[in-house]
Length: 249
Image 1 (tube, rainbow, N blue to C red):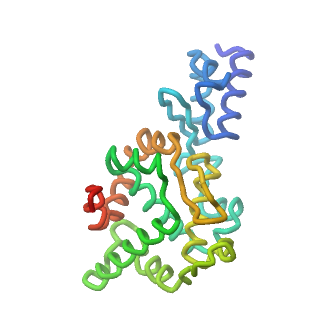
Image 2: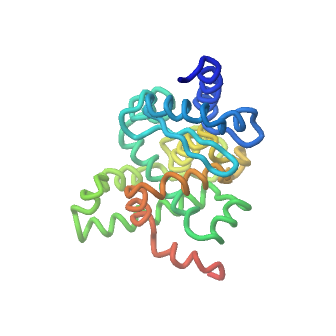
Image 3: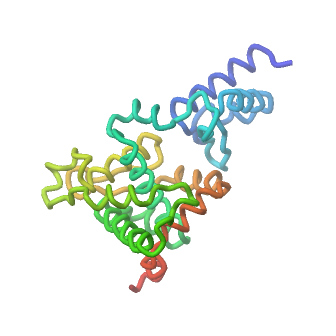
């Protein structure tokens, strides 16, 4: 029978996870979590509220299950939480930007080490998403139903991106404008930053993103088990990515 002390300790761990999303080995809660009774109770709490615990060697992550969660971050919730997500098509575009970023860092060991060290600039991400959109657009010309099977409204995503304002060099004055491509990328990256998965550097100049170890763990322990992630990843890969595997290009 679970005693009150166990429940108290487990609640403390669980609510810290809810607040911070990740607990690392330096946290007092890390050791507490691995007490078998506490762990069992935390897993029970997670299960009941539709969240999911990932245990990696140095960290514990809390992730919201895609369906049936008390804390579901579906479009409505996301819109309340992040005011910059104003319309569904922007939401879909932001999802594509995030997936494109994940696909870029989740390629091979060399790519992971490079992005961890150097990061990816917003401009590089913009080029990458643009290459992808051009690829999807030409694919749609040949196969108008492209994307339907994957339940992605390719046409709308491509059109929205195509007619978005391309940022001029005075990035500083435009960076708050989500209607520009760089503005949209900034919005997408802020979502990952809120989740504690990336660090954004040089906001006032040419901003760039450094993925944190937490993000690689999230990909390894969670997304690799999702077929949809793999489907998306395949769609995200452009021919340039294959050449990019060779750093001499």
